[in-house]
Length: 262
Image 1 (cartoon, rainbow, N blue to C red):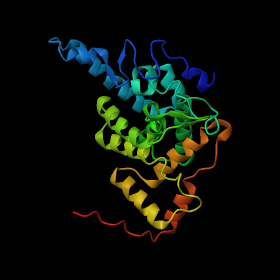
Image 2 (image 1 turned 180 degrees about the vertical axis):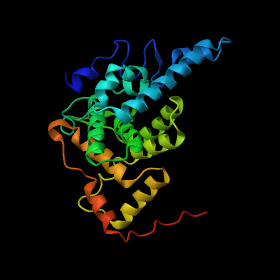
Image 3 (image 1 turned 45 degrees about the vertical axis):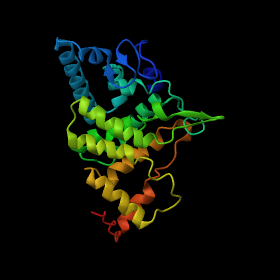
Image 4 (image 1 turned 135 degrees about the vertical axis):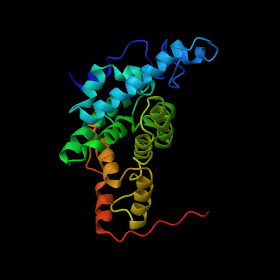
């Protein structure tokens, strides 16, 4: 069974915006969280907290160890347990760029591609989880930014919105702050290459590399996410757009990034 078919196997009460009897308003907060604000009994809030921590731990294990993480993620119903993932289902994409289907289908394919690329490149096992989770979450900002413009579908600003969502998700699911920061940076910058044709300038590479290193990740890990994104577009898949950036970085002699004014 394909990932696309598996991605449809979500409980019927979950909708595109994450709203349901389980999730309030697509914000990542359960309705019980809202009612608990005025509830003197903390039991339900504690149960929700434990459920989030359990889901967060399971996601990290799947991302770090599964050979086809999307299949394991669906098997454990983790998409349904994380509202920000459930919200990706049925969010449309421009078929010219994404013939594979909706955002959830693309994200699951990207997750699998990132896991395979990590294996092929012999990427350190202790770093694999953050990279695979970044691939899964790289378009998490699309539900709130996607719009139709004539015959096309666009999602302006989805990378920046996604960064903020990842920071909230990581905190709620109990991920380590250092890991969450790295994942959020990979999500924020996964589109950095789109405005450059051919080789980027050494200054552009140095600027991106500095931002990634400051967040606890690297140009190599960014290239895996970019590669996974490009590979998971069905018949529109394309070569790794990060390759020119790696090539320029390998030449060395990158200029020092300008210092921020104090």
